[in-house]
Structure formats: structure tokens, C-alpha cells
Image (cartoon, rainbow, N blue to C red; front, side, top):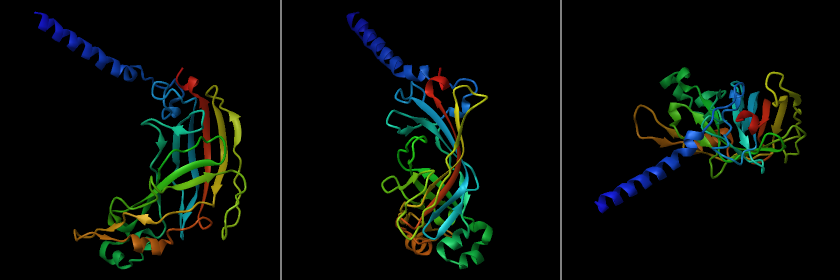
Length: 273
């Protein structure tokens, strides 16, 4: 009998520990009505260090690495929150959206392999570039805004792992709205400070609108993971071909990004009251 009581006691204790481990999940909250755009910001239960939330929409601009320039035609959203050290974190609803941008010249322009058009047709060689986070960003309130990224070059011909930049070797953007001071041969370029106003529909939200953020001082590493895969034959690594055709790696002073963006900022307490 005593053994049974002991076993029941151990089982009950284990159940209590299990339930306690689920408590943070049970306490997780949705955003307040009207603040759904900030859902990517961690709640206090997810990260108690987050003091403010943001959402930024990059509306247009361009991104140049080496000798390739990609226009930003599909808006990119970046959302999350920041702590007292101005470091950004986000939950499963936040981060940087994977908005694909069409690369002029397609796969042929990237590789120089003109015979691919005869083999596959031009429509199958459309190339996309998708910007992904590759580290911890800084809050979008105090320039320079640091944004470590990698660029995914997407087309089935290149395999699924063709990237410029990585977590271990990111492309580090330091975006400002002022005048840059790049190394040569780049010349200085100037951004535009956003206009600040209170959101008339959401109390306590500050809007930073029509800003233009620029950087032409960053370096870009070589492409890696690019594999030519055709008709089921043995894959052939074409990193060297992509890099020579695209001018990669490209040192600081030869690259540029211009990003027109709107942001909304609010303290966490209003998103998760």
C-alpha cells in the first residue's frame, strides 16, 4: 500500500511540474483590438525585456551588390520589438517577410549561360532575390539602423541554397537618413528623415512616414551554394561562375541600397495591456 501511495505522489508531482511548464503558454496574450499590426512583437510572457513594438514597411527602392541592381518592387515588412539595448527580437508572427524581388537579366544575367534559354525557355529562367535576416537588428529609432542580412537567389536551376551572405558572414547594412560617407569609388548619397505624427486611429502610436534610408558603405561576400541542376544530371557547383559574372565578392564602396519606408512605433503596454 505504501508503495502505491509513493508512486501516486511521484506521479502527482510530475504532473504539477508538467503543468507549470505549460503556464507561460497558457498566459500568452493576443494584441489589443486595433493593434494587430504589432502581433510580431513579443508579449511580456514571451520576452519581458521588450519595452516597445514596431512595424516597418519598406515600400520601394533598390539594392545593388557588385554589378547587379535589384529594384524593390514588392513591399517588405519588418516587425518586432526592442529592449533597453535597442536590440530587436520578434515572435513567430514577426521578423522580415520573404518578399521576392525580380532580378533583371534572370538566371542568364547571373551566370552568363545563354544556352539555358534554348534548353529551358526564358520563362523558366526568371530569377528572384529574397532578403532574409542573418543576425540581430537594431531598433528603427536611432540611426544607423543596423540590419544584418543574407540574399537568397531563387530559381530551380540554381538549387535551393544559392545565397549571398550567411549568419557567419552577413551583409551588414547601417541605414541612415542623412548623408553617407562611403569609401571610393562610391560618392555620398543622402536619405530623407521621416515625418513624425501621432496615429489618429490608434492612441499612443507614433507614425514615422515617408523616410528614405540609405547605405553605400557595406561590403558583400561571395555567393555560395549555387548548383546547376538540369534534367536530373549530376549537380555542378557554379559559385565561381555566379561570382565572376556578378562582381562578387564586392568591397565596401561598390554597393548601395536605398529604401523608402514607413514605420509605426508604440510601447508594449498598449499592445498587450
